[in-house]
Length: 302
Image (tube, rainbow, N blue to C red; front, side, top):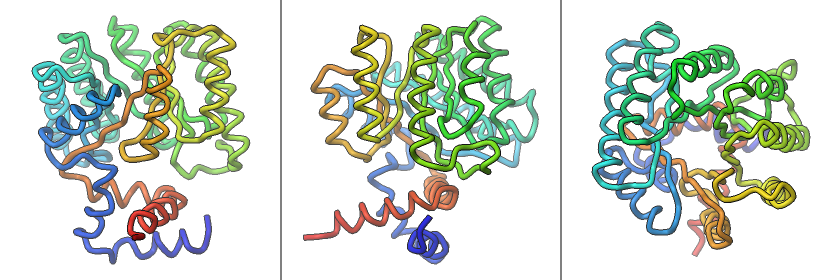
């Protein structure tokens, strides 16, 4: 983390909400489901799939968790009604994980069952390392309960990831692999970019070995090139994997992947908690603050 990144993070609380909203508008699809669906519709017209994420995490009230559960069910209903090519992604702390594990399980099951009505799919997002074991345990519990339309996320930054893949092998899991944005201690997480890249590639190999459908979630040119080479070496088809990217991040690279015939899914966050989401993401990983600032400066240049 550079001095500039730290300075940006310290200044965040003083930045007016209207400024944060303007800067984040490229990365967040508005505050309403209708706005998010407009974004998904446009992505679909470009040959891209989507994942809707209703913003919210670390809820402190049961009513909040239930409200987010219902927001996801409405999103799934609307996706079906409007014929959009999108699934949904949920954070378990938004559904009550840190309030009541039973509540969280019931909320997640309700969302998964709603998705199953339409032949749709739910991805459990991975949060910081304090939730990893609980998340994977709940994923296994619901999968073993007969719900196959559920996937999970593994982070290459965590040293446990290859062991987690081995532990999930019997489920034939659908897994998104990402680097991970959370700042974690060196005892449990790789700190160097190169070590994270190598673990990312090892995770891809291990997942393909057990027959997983893999979401390759990265904007890193080297990882994309290595993943493409791996797909070619293994003779994998379009239905064996997909690339995944964040809304507003390197869209030209996404267009290239689609143009080359690869499936691409864009992560589309929306909701009234946009401000908290924007600030928290930057504070959790100050490197991102520098990236956002640089990107903003580039866009402001004449």
